[in-house]
Image (spheres, rainbow, N blue to C red):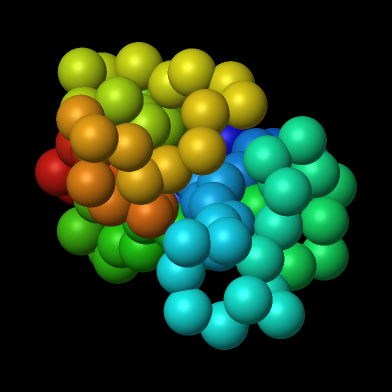
Length: 99
């Protein structure tokens, strides 16, 4: 949903982070089993990324999109970062039009 001054408020269930600590990383008490990464309270599956803009200068002109591949697409259930997408946050994008 695109509207100002907060643009691209994520729909319910639209996460922009999807990561969890593994047993190979420090702080083993925060490690999450792979099968539990979507449901564990220790995993980070949250809508954390937003696009902000000045309503006086811009208006939303397109749908919001997220990308966890670096190729302009979103693959549901993919933990990030990956070898091909090194960020632990999705790319959030839209089209703005000058007023």
